[in-house]
Length: 202
Image 1: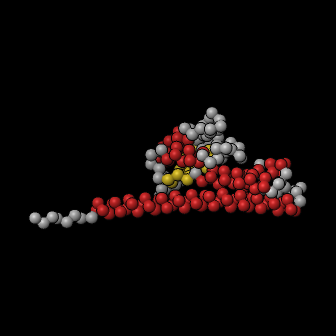
Image 2: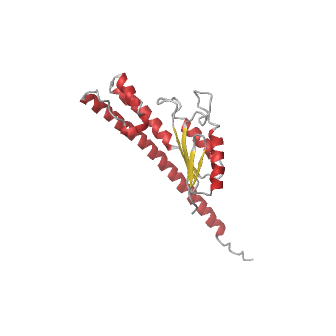
Image 3: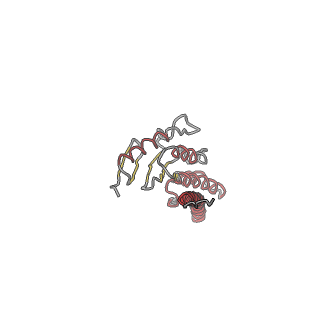
C-alpha cells in the first residue's frame, strides 16, 4: 500500500492512499464536477460558495463528500445531495459516492426546527439552539431557560438527531444492497463466461 497522499485545493481537502498522481487526477475532476452544481437560490456553484468542506477518496475509490448548506433551513436541503452525487458520479474511476453528511445535517435541521416549533419554544431560544446546528446532538442547552423548557429542547434535539441518523442508515443500507446485487451479478457473469463449453456431438 502506498503512503497516504493529501492534496489541498482552495476549499477542498482530499485524503487517499491511492498513488499521488491518481489522487490528483480524481481531485481535479471531482472539483470540476462540483463546480457544475449550483445552489437553486443563488447564481453560484456550491464549490465557489465554500459549501464543500472535504472530499475523501479511499483505496477502493469510494468517495465521501462533506458539505454544508447556505442556511440551516435551506429549501434545497432535499435536492442538493442528489445533485452532488450525480455530479461526482460522472468522474471516471469512481465506484461509489457517499454524500451522507449533508443528508444528516439537512434532516437534522429540518426536523429540529419542526420539533422546536411544536414544543412552543420561544423564538429567541429556538434561534440560539438552531445556530448550533453543526454540533448536532452536542448542542448546548440555553442556560437561562427553566427546567421544563430545557427538557423540551433536549427532547427536540435528541429526536431530530435520531431522525437524521435513521435516514442515513436507510440510505447506507440501500447502497450496501445495491453494491451486493451488483457484485453478485458481475461474479455470475464472469463465472458464466469462464465455464467450459461442451463440444457438440455430430
